[in-house]
Length: 391
Image (cartoon, rainbow, N blue to C red; front, side, top):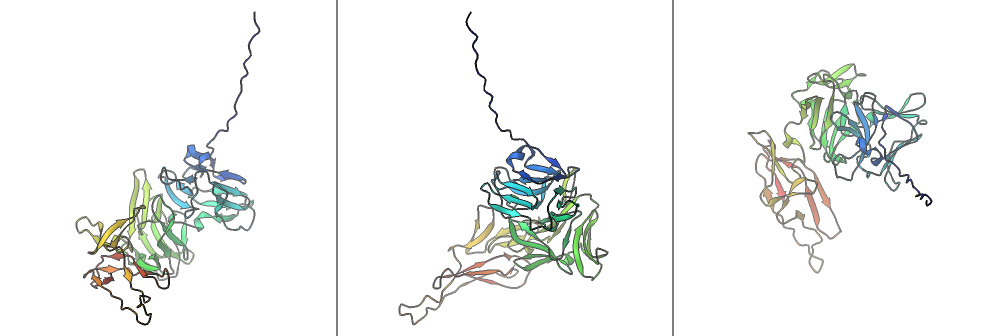
């Protein structure tokens, strides 16, 4: 009988990617990536009752931009984002150390971080109202996401005077846009490039109760409120149906919306302005916005001599058929250099009933190059003025 044949068995130890998530607290030194939390959709921390989650999240599947976000679990709605203007890939890192939170890309380059803190971080907590809080060993808050909102506030959060909400470019691109919402000492305002185009006090659903100096805005189970004197006085209020969970958000469209969530989904409760044509740049560059009298929905069009254009991001606008709006340069002189050519202008009459939001940018590529004029935000509101656009 022959000798037994022994075949060596080699065990290959392969690294396993596991999706481990934590509840309420995580502690330094902690590192998270989207890939390591892939089975949880990028989530690595949940609030105690699983109402909110902290995740490295991609708003649009198949896209390469990932953001460190706080998300309402049931509706899968982002309420806050850290690196909204500097996304990372799926292999980028979110790091929790004793110095705070930092976000780095796959090459180790810093993309975002919390500011310098007063003391050493002991833990990061995600509360059941959606607030990310850095705590020291004495349970004292060192930093809170609620103090640095992006485009949304939730029940339990306040928006103080001087704090600004900036809209996102789109639902998948969280980069900040040019629409802003802020609370002043007397009102709440929507602005575009610093121009006010809506005030809460002018809305028919808003009630003015006091002329006290406003300190903050909140939303709660009964409505939206501007408060004064340490929240003891209501200055302006919007009463809404009772709801346990609602958000106030500055949408990418430039509208400020309050909506509540229940088992049936989202219910829009308040919107300002209602007329979309009151929003600058709603129809893009030199686009004309008009309300459909039948459907009460906005539509965009172009004046004669202009044609519609759209970008890869889906933005809409109009450009002249000859592809430019140009002001002649004073450098267009005769060959002798002693005589300046007279610039020739023509004007396109837009007709009555056309108003516009004035925002002009002049570019000077070189001293003797053309002056390029970009015009933004024409809209068909109910003005009786007649305006012209240089062509």
